[in-house]
Image (tube, rainbow, N blue to C red; front, side, top):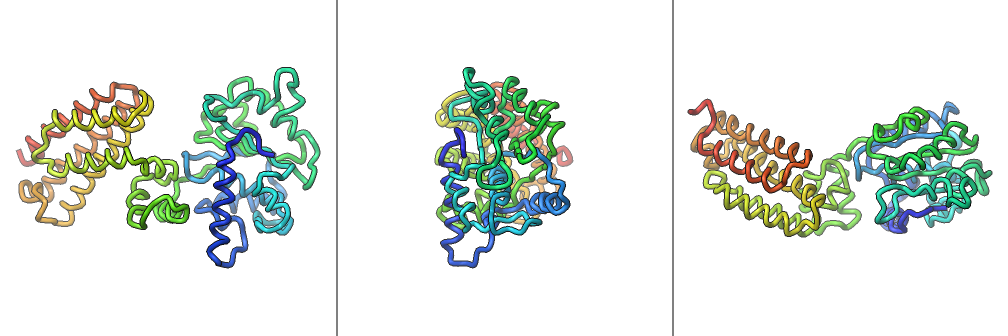
Length: 378
């Protein structure tokens, strides 16, 4: 049973599995669909082998790295009829696996943040006010399994529970049903109530490798070429969510604009550059929050250009004007503080400083540094 979680999640899950089967390769496990996180899988497998599987876990890590997919594969493994009792695995072919992939397995509950909402409604956790305690996730978990030996529940965006919902869940965590497994998926475990966190085991997940991100982009047909996948993966910080944002045509255009404007750093006119990029930033942003998010991407693009110049300097590329003007050491000494200035601007935007003013000041400082040159050369 999947509750109030968009069908696109299940469609994506099923599509990923079908794409692997469609390759014609020998597929022995549904886990073949997952990139990375093998250490976390081994941790759960050891717990099963020792008979120490806890009743509740927090799966914590940055957005877009595969925590939800991991949680679903773990749940599927609990139901698979073909797996060995001491393994965390799922065949993907048995009746239980097929029903799970279709989203119809009766002992599975999944809830999350509904579209357009800022908190997970208490109704999903404990039921409507007139049926409080007689429906919702906690009630479902208290029921005996219908088709397997346990019930498994996933709470996506668990940090979006309000106090009322968290306290309702807390009662279940304090006296968990013996046949229940609860998986809370969130970006940061510190965002959960301490009373919730203390009753769960925290399992931390880490960003994907660039290679994994590239492979996913290609397998999911999110890009037009392997070269584009490699470029996006290099900036995605191990997150498919960030990679998907970078595929936005507006952000692509913004990245191209930054590259063009900063291609000749020595001749940069800060007022003109600042106005052009901030005007573009405001054009592609529908509100203050999106403008801040896009502003952070803009700063990443600036850092990308500066890092590219640093690589050319250190490789001895004599076509670079900075190398001709300052030499390798002085050129590096000049560019490194510029990267620090970009980081400072990112902190200012994160601290809710006006985006336009932050960018104007940053570009002015970059131009001043380029005019003066490195301290060692003055």
